[in-house]
Length: 244
Image (tube, rainbow, N blue to C red; front, side):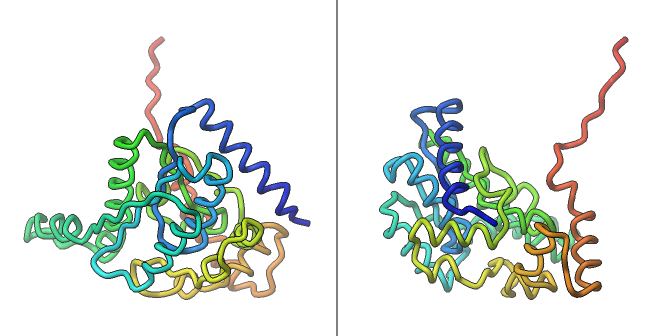
């Protein structure tokens, strides 16, 4: 029942309206990994604003084995792009840590996406930009993003769309199939998203949209992840003083 054409057109109009209210002469700035999310988000912004107002930022950490996909997307959309290698920044932070402080594996894993978001905002503020959040509903549902890393941005075109729906829009936008259907890898620990999650996106998307799932254990896992990661989608709790 998903009407990809209608949703795509509505999203394009929504992006235009966002910029009319939040910077009519501003550019859309986003990190380009070469995966489906950054590809579809960039293509939506190009259709909404024109290629001359979309800026891609490629941010490898040292050598990135699939960076050719990111270059291919920028060429396909004909958008301006910058390449900023974050390895020195990553190494610098690790080397600056006190010797007695042993960073957790999760801290080290989440450091690159946080550096990338800092880098994106530096580029955006220097290019009259607005940062595009490229998360989708499926990833957000189970907390598959880094808080204050790829989970943030100035506007989010796809955070209410599942992976399945994002792919349909990607094909509708005539993006190269190898980018839309590229096996999602988090780029942090070397495993695919689905290996890390313990279920497929197809199973997750069906459960999100219909409430149906065949494996009770996977339902329990999805529900547990969703509940544990809801805090990522909420505003920071603030103390409200009683001033009366």
